[in-house]
Length: 147
Length: 147
DNA sequence: GAAAGTTGACATTCATAGGTATCAACATTT
DNA sequence: AAATGTTGATACCTATGAATGTCAACTTTC
View (cartoon, rainbow over the protein chains, first blue to last red):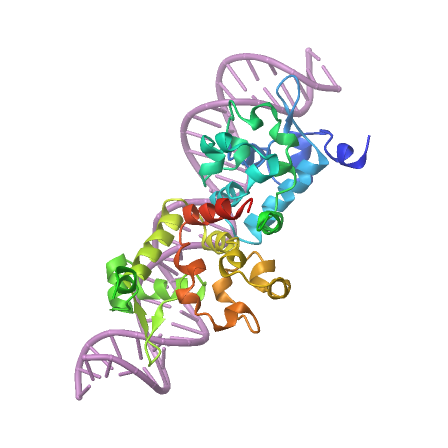
């Protein structure tokens, strides 16, 4: 198992994750309801957080507490990620895709029937895993421009 | 004079603009200090608002009041506009450009010495004039992707 | 089987962002 | 000349977003 796989291993139950982050269990569920995070679930539907999840949530909390970006602001920023370039979906897919067309919710909060994304697990998708900070979002926008 | 020139004619002093928008004079100055708007100035350094300015501010207020995006969130979203593709600046320009590299403030809030932008008036620039809403920002990101 | 998890609802606390008000000293507009 | 504008500071209000707590009924974990 390589490093990136280790970091994505779900190891912390919700209470432990909350303690590590210094926030309440309630808040973690709220972030999930808002579509900011996609924690692993056990067979019995219990949340389980990886080291990557912890770092992602720390990043989100910096945006809220230090950069003073509201949760709806973060959702909007995530919705601007050019996911279609990452997954290289078809023009046909794009024409019907709420994530491609919209600008309010992250792409990973939508169902994607009949598209390239329908068989992909958003949790594993680079759009989700590599873009927790504004920094990374802008880097992608720079990268896709021009070619 | 064509329609777009008429709509950009500075005609309202700050008090009138505030009344049209139903907000205080103070709030208008605050939006400007935050870098959300660039009103015209008279020879005597007094603000003067055009119809375009009014519409832009209405758009910003919808983002704040309806979409619940904080001012810092709006600034961050504006900072993601791929301005470099609009003005077609050089690679050299980009390497030294705070707007290209950063992700906290709109490009029109920076000075741009020794770049394509240094002789451009940001007020007239399409980056500023055509991207007051998230809708328009995303549309540009879609447009620049892939070619 | 005890501890910790689940969803959903509801009530509440706390901090602060967004917006207002006022002052002074001064400049511009009409 | 009077009205309206400027910057900058300072103090203040208030609406609300972020976060917490609790309860019930139930399930999963260890």
